[in-house]
Image (cartoon, rainbow, N blue to C red; front, side, top):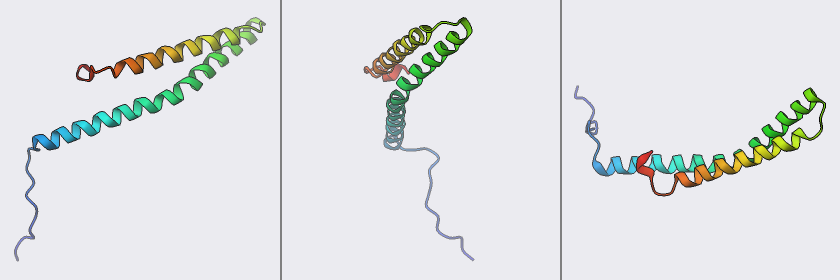
Length: 94
C-alpha cells in the first residue's frame, strides 16, 4: 500500500511568510494596547477612589477619597501618554 500524498512542508519558512507573521504579531500587540486604554481610566479612578474611601474610614476624614481619585486620574493620563508615546515609530526597540 502506498503512502498517501502529503504536502511537502519545509522546515524553513519563507521570508515573506516571516514578514507576514511579524506584521500579524505587531497588529495584535497594537490592538491589545489600544483596548487596554478603555479599561485603564475607570480602573485607575475606581482604585484611587476606593483607596481614599478606605483611608477616610481609617482616619475619620471625608476628603481623602477625592484626593486619591485625583491621583487615579493623573495615573490614568500618565499611562495614556506612555502607551501613546510607545507607538511613535520606535517599534524596533521593543
